[in-house]
Figure 1 (cartoon, protein in one colour):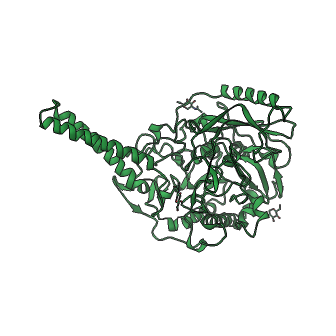
Figure 2 (cartoon, rainbow, N blue to C red):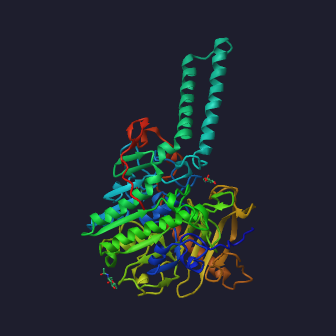
Amino acid sequence: MSYKPQLVPSEWLWVTLLLLKLKLSFRTPDIDCLARGVKLTQHIAAAQFFTPSRAAFLIGRYPIRSGMASSNRYRALQWNAGSGGPPENETTFSKLLQQQGYTTGLVGKWYQGVNCKSFNDHCHHPLNHGFDYCYGMPFTLLNNSQENKPPELGVALQAKLWLYSQIIIIAVIALTTGKLTGLISICWKIIACFTLVDCLFFISWYSSYGLVQHWNCILMRNHDVTEQLMRLERTTSLMLKEAVSFIKRNRYGPFLLFVSFLHVHTPLFTTAKFIGKNHHGLYGDNVEEMDLMVGKILDSLDKEGLENHTFTYFASDHGGHLEAQAGSAQLGGWNGIYKGRKGMGGWEGGIHVPGVFRWPGVLPAGTVIDEPTSLMDIYPTVVHLAGGILPQDRVIDGRNLMLLLQGRTQSSEHEFLFHCCGSYLHAVRWHQKDGKSVWKAHYVTPVFHPLGAGTYYGKGICLCFGEGMTHHEPPLLFDLSQDPSEAKPLSADTEPLFDTVVERIGRAIEEHCRTLTPVPEQLSLYNVIWKLWLQPCCGTFPFCWCDKEGDSTQNL
Ligand SMILES: *[C@@H]1O[C@H](CO)[C@@H](O)[C@H](O)[C@H]1NC(C)=O
Ligand SMILES: *[C@@H]1O[C@H](CO)[C@@H](O)[C@H](O)[C@H]1NC(C)=O
Ligand SMILES: *[C@@H]1O[C@H](CO)[C@@H](O)[C@H](O)[C@H]1NC(C)=O
C-alpha cells in the first residue's frame, strides 16, 4: 500500500491547522470565531457520504438501522425522482423538538429524498420529518447543476440505457425484416411490444442525458417548487436571506434552525466578488464565501440578542473529496494529516470532521476536547436541551454531549464506534475506558493506486466491496492516539496488547451485530432509479419550468 500524507493542512474546516497557516490558507474568521467555544478534535461522521451520514445525524442511529446504508454501488440518492429516503417510522430530532414546541426550519440542501409513490406524496420531504418550514434544494449541487461542467451523475447509467435501446432497435429491425421476408413467423404484436420497450429505454436515456440538471437542480419552499431550473448566481443570497429571516421571524419563541450549506461541493459555484480571493483557487474562494455566510447568520443571531440563548454547532458530513480536481487545482479540499477521503470506509480522511460549538455563558470558551464523539450525538443532545424524551423502542447510537461540552466529565460515552462503508463493516474504533489509547482495527481497506500527483483508488469515488478491496485477517491495527495518520500498522511483535485488543474488538462487533435487525433498504437499485411518476415538477409534466423568486437578490 503506498500512501503519502498530505502536507497541506488546509482541509476547509480544520481550524487548528488553519490558524497555523493563516496567511497562506483560507481566511475563515467567522468559523474561527465559532471555534473559540468548544472544539472537538475527534468528531466522527457515521458515513463517508452525504445521504447516509446526514440520515444518521438526523435520526441519531447508524445508517444501517434505518435502511440508509447501501449494499450496492449507489450510496447516495441519484435523482429527486427516486423513491428512497428516511422511512416515515424513523424519528428525527427535529420531530421531537417540534413536539416540544420548537419552531423548526431547514435552509439549504436536504438530499434525503422527496417522494415514495407519487409525485406529491412528499413522504421523505423535510416537512414530513419534523420541519415546520423548509427552503432549499431537495437534492444537492453537482457538476450537472452548472452549464459547461463535466457531468458527474448519470454517465454510467446513460451508457447502459443507450446500449439497451440500441440492442433492442437492432432486434426490432431484424424481426421486422424477417417477418416481411417470411423468414420468421412472429406476430406483429410482439414486434410492437419490442418497439414500445425500446421507446421507453430511449426516453429514459434522453431524460437522463439532457435533463439531469432539469430534474435535479430545483429549489423548493415547503411543498412548492419555486425554481426549476435553479439560477445558481443568486442561490447563495437567497439561502442567506431565508436563514436570517427565519431567525427574525422566530426570535420570540424557541426554534431550531438547520442551515445545510450547498457550499463547498463541486461545482463550487461562487459569487463573482469572491472569485480569485485566495491561494487555494476556486475551492478556497468557495470556503471564504461560506465563511461569510456563517458570519452573517451569527451576526443576525447576535443582533437579535439571542447569542446567550442559542446552542450553535458547526460540522461537516464527511471528509474532502480529493479526487475532484481540474488540472492541478484541488476542487474537493484536503484532509490534512488524515489518510483516505470521501467515500472510503474506515480511513480517518472520510469520516474525521470538524465539530465546533458556541454557547456563551454555558459552554466554556476555548475548550478543546479530544475524546471520540459522533455527529449522531447531536440528536440526544438537542433532545435533552429541549426537554424531550428519546424514543424508547429502538437503539439510539448517539450520546448526549452536554456533560462533556461543559467540562463536567472528561470522557466520552463512546467506547466503540463502527465505521461502515455502505452496509459493510470496514473498521472499528475502540476508546478504551480509563485508557489513553484509541485503537482502530481495519478489516477491509480500499486498494490505493499511485496515479499522477497523489494516491488514488481509481478515478471516481471508491466502492465498498468487490475487487478494489483488501481484506485483513487479523485486522490492521492502529493506535490513533500515537498515530493519527494511520501510517504504521501494529503487529503482535510491536504491540504487546495486539491480541487482546483484536479479540476485544471482535467481541464488540458480535455484540453490535446482535442489535441490528433487517429493514427495507432505502438505496436499493429500484429506489435510486429515476421514475417518471415521482418527478417534482413546476408546471404540467413534462413541461416543468418556473421561477417564482423574481429578482429578489440581495448583495452578500
Ligand atoms: C466537475 O467539474 C470539474 C471541472 O470544473 C472537473 O474537474 C471534475 O472532475 C468534475 N467532477 C466530477 C466528479 O466529474
Ligand atoms: C452573553 O453572555 C456574556 C458572558 O456570559 C456577556 O458578556 C454578554 O453581555 C451576554 N450578551 C447578552 C446579549 O446578554
Ligand atoms: C420501520 O418499519 C420497518 C419495516 O416496516 C421495520 O423493519 C423497522 O423496524 C421499523 N423501524 C422502527 C424504528 O420502528
